[in-house]
Image (cartoon, rainbow, N blue to C red; front, side, top):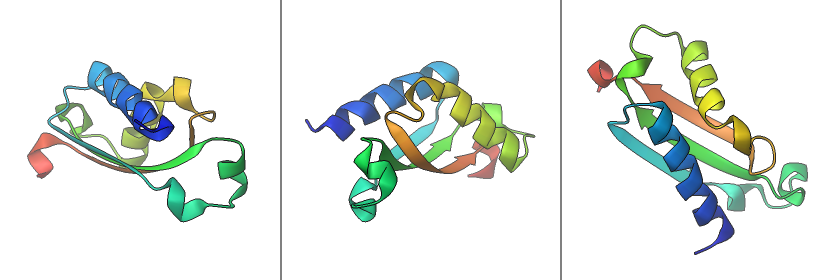
Length: 92
């Protein structure tokens, strides 16, 4: 298991602890950013798609803040950049 696969497992655990996750996909996109300054420090680039009822009624910014709060122990060391798609269960 690669270091980023291990990281993804930890991210998933933290997100599942914070939200009643209905669906979750975390993709490592670090290879797309090889040579980028953030990659040099060891932080990865990830794409996250999550569906959870807690996002209902929240703005896009509030949803992103909630995800960042759940993952805060990983930022910026393990996560340098994060693309987020966060939907409530009634939006799927």
